Length: 111
Image (cartoon, rainbow, N blue to C red; front, side):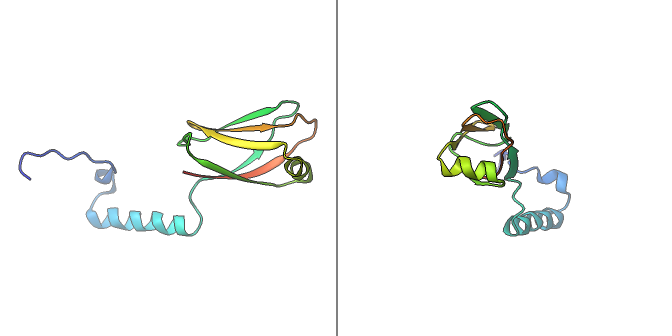
C-alpha cells in the first residue's frame, strides 16, 4: 500500500538477503525443536534463607516454571512440599524452607 510505513518487529535488515534471513529463521526453529530454547536453568538455592530470586530476562508474570530436584536435599524439600515457584517480570522467585545444606534444582520456564 502506497504511503504506508512498516514497523519491523524482527531485525531482518541485519540478516542480509531474504535467503539469509530465511536460513537463520529455519536454523532457530530447528534449534527449538531440538530443545535449545534457552529456557532452562540450574539453580542452587540460597542457604539459610526462605526465598531465592533468579534473573531470567524475558520472564513474565504469566510464565510457568517447571522444576525438578537435582540432589537429595532438594528432593526431600520437594517431597515435603517446601518449595514452590512463581514468575515475575524478568525473574523466577523460589520460596523454600531455610536449610544449611546446598540444594539444586533444574528449572524450565514456559510462557
